[in-house]
Length: 144
Picture 1: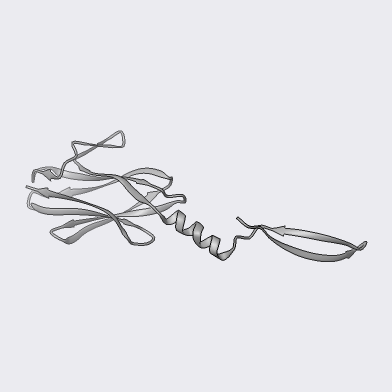
Picture 2 (picture 1 turned 90 degrees about the vertical axis):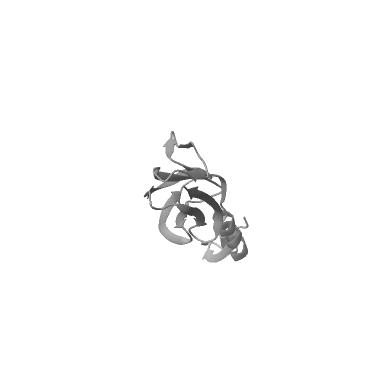
């Protein structure tokens, strides 16, 4: 980080007073913002149970009577607080979008959606970075 020095002259017994002001150059501000926006998903799982903040019985196929499913996501790399969105799709139609906070460089989070027995077929959850709206990762699964 560069420190920009602002010099102020005052006629006080013929001395100069230097005032230092820490300012980040515009290019460095952009670099800081880019770093804080970079997040990755290190783990993703679809599971019927979350226990001690970890998915249990994760799979990519579930029976139609499953009831509820969780999308567990372990997000890494967020240097400042941000958020991700779990976008749940059934047969390519958006069913739910759930915004989840990410408050540290390594953050586990999850969302829950009810699955009715009639909703057999292809499902997916897109994990979207809340600020850039970029799809970070996708989990696909089937309800049989």
